[in-house]
Length: 166
Image (cartoon, rainbow, N blue to C red; front, top):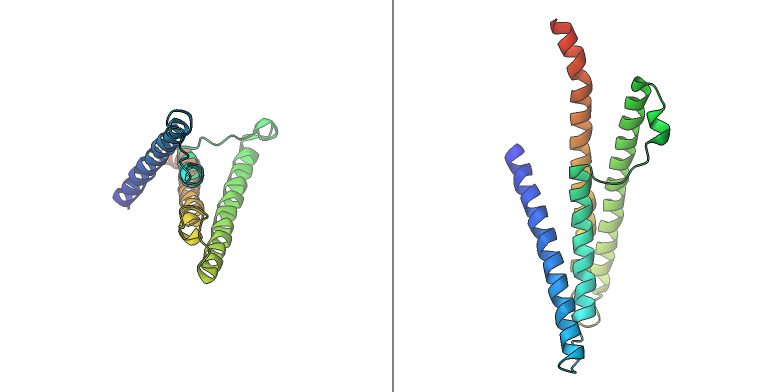
């Protein structure tokens, strides 16, 4: 399982890198075409928008994996340690459930796009393909969040097991 997760982590990192690099290149090319060559690069704006969407939703999953999302802990930090742990677990469970629900809703949206056959304006890409990253990003975030819950519970048990061993 750890090898599979390692591969998933690598794919996430490479994909977010490639989308950001591609987006920068597309925007630079668009500016160059417009300002230097005096010709419009008509697909640039749309392509960069879709690359941004893909990068953001992969980045959300990476942020969950790295525990780097912003959180406000002022109220939680004044609670006793035991209560802090309970609040942390509740927060993690609620967040995980929301990722799963958002993924399901996004998947339903993709199914609607597939039924209607809607395509993007300039690139003529199926919108179902463009927004495929939404459920993928949410479900990857849910997987990373479940991993965090498991690790959190293990860390909570570790001190008790050490005390019992002594």
